[in-house]
Amino acid sequence: MTEFAAFRERIIAICGEHPYYTYNHLIIQGREDFPEIFVKYGYRSCQLHAEARTQKYVHNLAQSDPTAPCVPEILDVFEDDHGRVYVVKELITEPKLDAWLKSAISADVRCHTEAVKKVAAAISWLHACPRPSDTRIGPVGGGVIQHCIFGRFREAPIVFAHAAALQAYINEALSRAPPGGRCTVNISAEPLLLCASEITPDNFYLDRTTGKVGMLSFGHVSFVPESLASLALSPTRSTFVEEVSRLVSLPTDKRNVLGGAGMLIVMLGARNLDMDEHGRKRSRTRRSRRSRKSAVARATVPSSDTVPKIRSPLASSWV
Image (tube, rainbow, N blue to C red; front, side):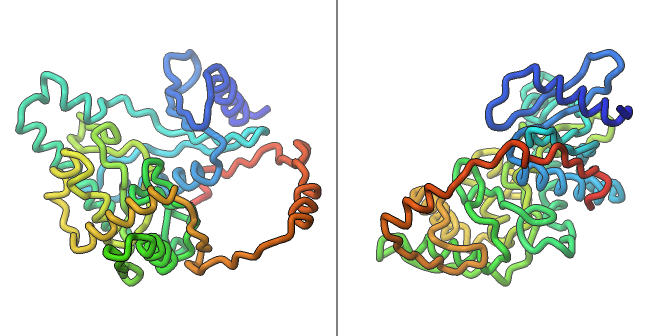
């Protein structure tokens, strides 16, 4: 076994010592002959790979820009023989912004104001990031958009192929409103901005060496139309978001309509609304009871032998 393979096997073993549910993370530190790292792991393969691709892309951009926020490095990404994905990140030991703001040193109002300014600058820098040629909408490289318009879990029910498909989905949700409140919104021609939808103090940290703010998680970061980036900064979300939004220049004329669409999407169960990835209505055909029973009878559970033993795209080969 190579040293690199042994490193991965050790990570799998350490993560296996802890309870696992749907999604988890683990800080590995204080162990002899093993580096201090942060590991995010789970069975949500597409989402974890998309998060890692996005974070790696932003990290690379930040390395060559002195005005950029701090972004932890992606060290490795791999899957075990059970299909669980492990995203290995640089461990950040600096205090999260929420803890720093509550500490005695930063209790001064001026420190709070400065922290809000730094987060607003980080969000604005993200918005200005160039879009990779292979990404039309969503996380870098494509995938599921995670955004507050889709409700509590912030995950789109469809992998939208383009902004027009997302617009069609939102307008379909708006069409389900009571007659007096129905309207439409046009966002398909807007510029796509790299949007952080989870703007909370515990997702940022303060690098005390450089004085910069850094971002910790990129699972909620996607390229979306400008108005959705603006919706993520809606003052109604929290006091902290309200303070940050005052310092970020984005149009606000569609916030109310999109906010209403978000409420309808949640009320409708964040379902696909019979839309496909291109924003077209799916055809709904009725099958006889006999044909449905036949389809169930033909369904089989895949054998564990068909599961690939390991798929290990190195982080350095992605972007």
